[in-house]
Image 1 (cartoon, rainbow, N blue to C red):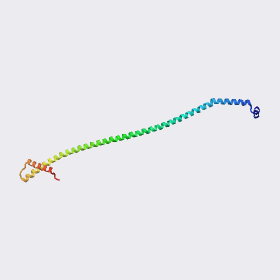
Image 2 (image 1 turned 120 degrees about the vertical axis):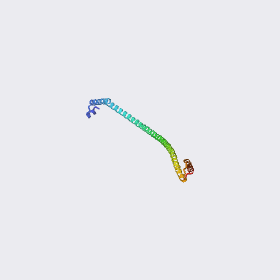
Image 3 (image 1 turned 90 degrees about the vertical axis):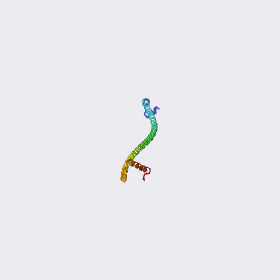
Image 4 (image 1 turned 120 degrees about the horizontal axis):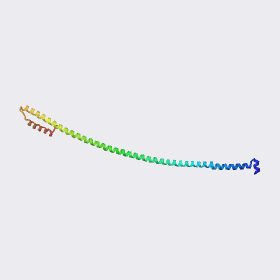
Length: 170
């Protein structure tokens, strides 16, 4: 082999020294460079795995949150519908109470009007009676050329009014 090295111009001691130096270089690089690089890459891979796991968990939680939000919205809509229905019911009851109060007040007004009308009718009848008595006395006095007592005239008018009440003209 020595001939072969000489033929190619290779110095054996120098080659051996270079192989030893290269081996030392590889061992030093492996210990001080390669292992830290591999450890850094491994840490990075682990962080990536953890980030992927966290992202999946967040996505799952996001889906759960959306379901929960949808359930809360549905419950809120149900509550709103219930509140609206209750408000409509209460409004209907209050409207009916207002109508009943209005009917009661209208009845009172009609009753008061009826009383007032009855009082006015009595007053009018009394006034008419007095006028009729006066006119009857005057007419009878002129016809008979004698004076008629107011008591007799009142009796005649009362009898005429009783006849009119019993069978009013149409």
